[in-house]
Length: 124
Image (cartoon, rainbow, N blue to C red; front, top):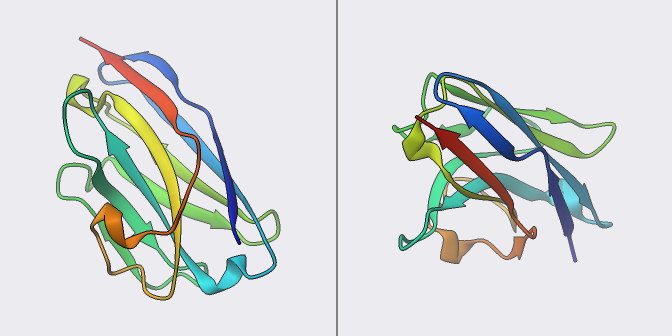
């Protein structure tokens, strides 16, 4: 079992930055890939970025590449999503997720564990 708790969402103007954190716990958490997904109103949940705890393998959605950066604090078991140059279309509920094994599965249905979500709103 893996437990995930997100924090750091909020309201920001277009062009601004936000930092989301995901605190992960559980005895086997290090065997899991970690990722961020988002869901805008009326839309399906979509992949944003996924990675491994050990690093070296990261997948970014084309829509966020160059603007968002994922990082890991292996001591605190925390995954951070730094979001820069935010756009109104980035507005969504952002979810931290975990799955055992590879981070290369980019559809949300392939991920087993989810946080409660945190709202990110970007105003124009």
